[in-house]
Image (cartoon, rainbow, N blue to C red; front, side):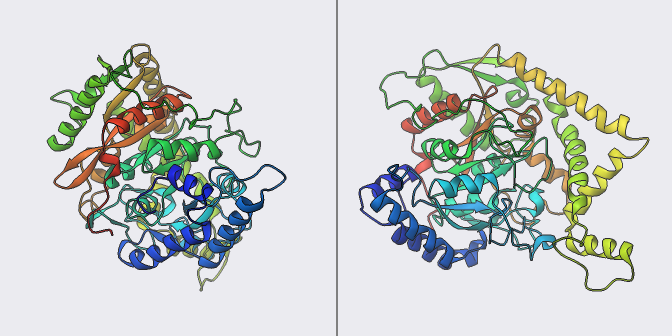
Length: 497
C-alpha cells in the first residue's frame, strides 16, 4: 500500500482491499518508527486520527444522505502546522505558539474534513514560514529522507519529508516565495502553488498576506489534482478569495496517449534562467537535468521558444522588502496578551510585550520583523516599500508579455540539490538566494509547480513549470504527460523501507 498513489489508495478503499483504520494505522506506525530521525511531524494524535478513519469507514459502508463517500474519504493526509485545526496544537513552528490549541478550523482543513480525509498530524516547518531549509523551526530541523545530513527545503519541509519518507501519501503546504516548490524539488515530489486567491487563506497563519498561498504536495500530478479539487473554492471569510467556477482538475487530466500528445504546446525558456552568463548560481548538474527534461518535452511534441523576463533579477530584493513589511504587520498580534507565549517574568505591560516577543520569536523571524518595520517607517516607506511594489508590477508585466509568446514557462526550481544542514544558516543572503527561481511567481500571483526531473549525485532535482493566471489545469496536464513518459516521480529514498 505504501507504494500506491493517493488515487490508487482511494480505489483500494472503495474496493475494500483495506479499511481506512488499517491504512491510517499503517502510516501512524511508520511515523512512530521514522519520525524521530527525520523530524517531519510536530504533532501526532493517533486517537483523533483513528477516530476520523473509523468515521470514514462507516461512511464508505453505509453512505451519508445518499451521497456516499468521495475520493478522499478515508485517505490519511499530513497537514502543515500553519493551518489552524480545531482541537490540535497549531504552532507555526514557533515557541510563540507552542501552547496554542486552535478553537476553529482553517478553510483548507474544514474542506478536507468535509471530504472525509484523515489528518495524520501537523508537519514541521520553518518558523512562521520564514526560511528555505526548515532549519528555523523551534522544534528542530527537518532531515531530508534522501540524505539525513541535508535539508528538506522550506518552509514546507516537514510536509515534503513526510511524503518522501512514506509517512503520508500526500500533504498540504504553503508557498510565499517558493515554500511548496523548493522542498518538493529537494525531496523528489510534485508540488503545486496555485494562482493567488484560488485557495482560501482563512485560518492559515499569515506571513505575507499578499504572497501566501496554500497548495498540495504529493507524488504525482494526479494526486495534486485530486487534493486541489478539495482545496479550491470561494470563501467569503477571505477577502482575497477569488469567486470563479470550480474546475475538476482530476477529471481534466488527459488519458495516456502514444505519439506526441503535446504537439502545439509552446514552452518559454527565459534567457535569465538559461543564459550562459546569467544562471543565477544554478549548478551545472541541476541545469543538465532541467535541459534533459525539456528535451523529453520536445519528444512529446512541444516546441520551445526563447523569452525574456528582464526584471527577474529584481525579484529577490523586491520580495525581501515586501514580505518582511507584511510580516512585521501580521506578527504584531503576537504580544503575549491574548494567546501564545508570555514571558514568565516582567515588570510592566511594555516589558511584558518586549520580553514575550524577544523570547517567543527566533532569530530569522526577528530579522524580518526588523527589516519590515524599517522599510515601513517614516522617511523610508517611499524609498523602499513603494519602490518594491512598483518593481513587483514590472515583474508581473514581464510574465504577461511572456505568455503572449508561450503556453508555459520552464526552468529550474532550485539552483542546487539539497545542501548540507547548517551550510547556509550563518549567511541569510545565501539562504534567500535558494528561492531565486521561485520568488517572481509569488510576486506576480501566478501558479507554479515543481516536478521531479532526475538525480545529481543521488539527490533529486526539480523542473519548475509556471503558468498563466488560473491555468492550474493546464499545468497539471503538462506535468501529467511528463510523468506518463518518465519514472523519476516513482523513486523513493533507498533507506526508507
